[in-house]
Image (cartoon, rainbow, N blue to C red):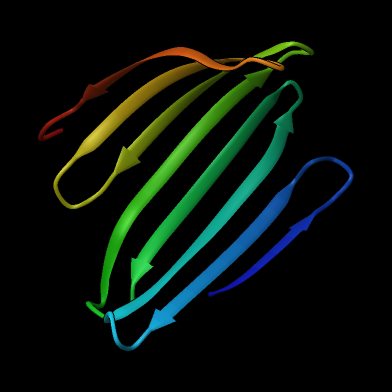
Length: 107
């Protein structure tokens, strides 16, 4: 696996990952972009792709609201068979303390 990550002082980040394993038939990559949109709001997008099957695996879009000791993250995840929305809350030093998710079915 090969992975690269760059981040600036404003907390904007770009991450790329590629994994190849001929024996297991894995040829996979992902690209993720995180943008400090209007602090305290942060926006992220990730695309995952399977080069072996020549198909898109998943798109993930999220918006996060961050405060000093807590944050809330709303995520929309879509793949071939499923669309999911999830709301998660995180307390600094504790981790994720709960969340709500739902399947959007055929929307």
